[in-house]
Image (tube, one colour):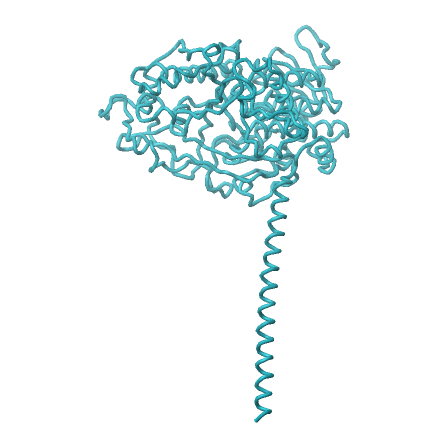
Amino acid sequence: MILSSVPLRLIPLLAASAFGLTGATAATYEYDVVVYGGSPAGIAASIQAARMGRKVALIEPSRHLGGQLTNGGTVMEPKYSHLVGGIAREFHHRIWSWYTDDAHWTFQKRDSFAGFSPATSEPDNQRMWTCEPHVAGRVLDDMLREARVHVILGRSLNAKDGVAKEERRLTSIHLGGDDVYAGKVFLDASHDGQLMAQAGVTFRTGREANVTYGETLNGIRPVDAEGKWAKWNLDAHVIEGDAKSPLLPGVAASAAGEAGADSPAPPTATLALCVTKEAANRLPWPKPEKYDLADYELLVRVAGKLDAKSLFHLEPLPNGKARLVPGLELAPLFNTAPAELPSADRQTNRTNTRRQREHLMGLFWTLANDERVPEPIRKRLQEWGLCRDEWRDQGSWPSSTSVPGIRRLVGTLVLTEKHLRGEESSGDPVGMNFGSAQWSPSLPFATKEGRIAIEAPTKLDFPPQPVGFQALLPKPEECTNLLVPVCVSASHVAEAAFRNEVVLMVLGQSAGTAAALAVEHKVDVAELEYSLLRSRLVADGQVLEDELLRQEVHQKVTREKAAAETVLSELDRKTQERSNARAAAQEKRKQQEAGR
């Protein structure tokens, strides 16, 4: 694990008006709010701050905005739709509006898609919680353009002196090419926390030990002794039965350590692809240029143990598409290309991204084409393929894979497993979190007997809960004008609960609101009065508590109270009856004694 607070170098800020050149080699652009990272959170933050009259720059190091929304598509559990407000809810209404047009249903009839709700007199039915990646991208682009957000693509922080800071305040960021973006408030809305890392605030990587925050699911997990991998009894060596041959690629020499101990390993790449079975729109799985079958020997051996239906989960998307997520047993094989901790060096990051992409391409190509893979599995993969109408500039392959939780802020408040379970409160709410947190096994490793073992997978379903404002803020003694709505202040366990793109969009809007209010009232976000922030969030439709749950609890308490009163009333009645019976018996005895 890394616990880091990074020293800074100052960049001299050149005096110039917005968009004005400062000289032959550099330009300085001045904004109220500078957002680094075009994730759903960064987009929502930019739109909100701009709608509140602020001058906003949104900087995305890649050429694509939207994160998983515009890569694998979006699928959300409708039962939590009442917890989604503000810009996130507006986004899903715009998605619904797009799909009301029959012309946008190219490969499927609208009425045949269960995720579409017809127009009714009830406005809340006019939401759609699933969509195709390119539709999400189009809607987000429209919202940014309407808000007049200045979007800068393909520019990242300078590797050595990317941040300028005066005492506890950020003053500007320095992008490659010598451009300087000055701001009053900054947001790190990236998935890898590069701005945060250079801003001099404390952050963590890896997994904390359970003892760090009194958790039970953190750190190195115990060996999965009862799962399928254990039952498969796979040989860990290239030559089966030969203990002297090298270990298979992707198999570690031993376990990372004792269960519950901290682990320095960064998170591994996760995957969700948009795929289709429609022949007119389907492309075959591409074979990477540098393909080596030896890299996928373990994959072939595992595939021989699985049935076709357990390979992937397919979640329906419009137009005959689906969101593909690897099955639990296959997930460790998607993790055999660990993500290195990103630096601000663009070339290094590009190399790592290309390596991960080629690994995943090779994985799918192998499952669909290698004759050693059982035929039912090959046929199932061949039925599905990449979408011809998605990511056209990327050869129909997603622009990136998601590597969440690489860095995590350590602020005044650190969200932990206890917050997920509802055992502790996170304070002043700025949005609702909901769903579940799941941790796939990390790299397979070799046992002393030369067999393959993995960590036990873990999943935690947690009740909907408010997210406190302090989880988005660094410690005030480290920085006072920075907000972090993606790499929130959380343990490794709690961070896994913030991989829902809809929740990130909600937190992004709240962060953008705080940034705009701080500029308007000329205070740092660390000093912003929560009552002021809350009133604006509510006015803009953000959901800060689970009203349905509150009503359910109230109704339950009312029912239980009524039931208890009924029981007590019945007890009182029976007690009175017994008392009356005793009194009557006593009176009768008195009369009998008097008659003698």
